Length: 565
Image (cartoon, rainbow, N blue to C red; front, side):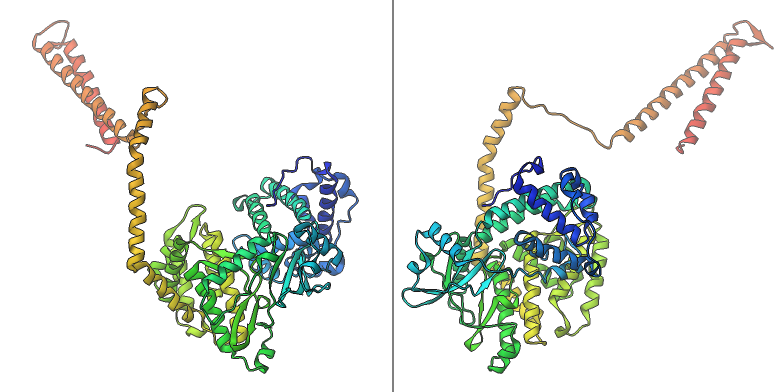
């Protein structure tokens, strides 16, 4: 597992300084000086930046920014190429024009020497390749940024391919990941609008995925699991793997002699049924997604071989997707609402497969979803493209502060990719129609007695566990209360207006009582005929009545002013 160490003083280690300067130089070369300045990297690499030419070549300036970004990643090497490939599955992070450009990423690089291959074998197995295999082709049949593949033959004569990583690739990637982690922290600190995407978390997830891709024992396990879930299916062939000739840095598997799905003319000339191949490929991926929840994450034409009798063979199992039963059910609900044009259920379906990032306006979301459905409602079924609908749906949910669950992004990319391959083979492919049996299967699975019993058992077990935990939790709370470690506080909310009203009412009642007493007292003084007098009327009584009149008028005005009589 590759670990990311925090970079303190970035220029204190030569390996970081040298690589960091190369990264900055390439960013300047492709016209990303604004990004370098926005991240304020100069405070870490002042001496290095002064020596770098900041102006891109005129020929490069003519290209679009997404295209320059793709070219920069290719020149930066394996870590950044893989990062670009991961980003190409995340439309929540980058715009569509970048997605399209990153899909073109190429990692074709010169092969490394057979001497270095022998060193890897000696370190992993203690033997040279020709001691393990009857035949081992010194010239690789394919080379990429992370490793290369050689043809060979086992002692029993079986033809195989052997996959080995590039020398020192783990250390190279470790340095790049540490620099990427540092750049992510700078982005969170200085670039507005990226904090919500949590770049540091993305780099950590990327490091995890890359570590698994470099560990060939993980890919071997993926192939074995993939083969088990399609056991008995004659429409697919899964390559045999050889654990005895594989390690974490060596993968040996059966050599597949087939035709790439992208070679349409060759398939047609040799009599293959293109419509059947397209249909089978689509059905196989949907079975992976809806039934097994374990699917090929990158089913592009180069990773799909066609064998005699129109049999499908998937290759390269380094990037696999996983869906829980709940994720499959939630996505099925959404697909049902789309297929049946049920605008009432589609809102709930979208909320079920997303995480809420901010305030959500349910009414506005529902209106936009209805508009999305209306655009496709009256189109013929063969004109509907599932990938296009799902991509538009992704853009819509992002505008409403929603984010698709990460494992679903890879699934949508896989469905879109296999649909593209299918349409290349058969322009009349109807993916939505092919999906209906699998959607019904998921619905039926929910109602299966065994599944219902299992669900009831799970729920009952959870309630039983809760009941068992309540006494101990209650004792813990009582112990804390007895020890004085817990205080209970009560807070009244929404009672301020009631308190004010009660104060006003009680004040008015008290004021009225005083007013009544003033009037009664003044009346008694007048009746008692107590001097001094004015025109035969006691002055004290007259003053009392005058004060009572003012008080009464004041009370009346107060009642009228507050609108309550």
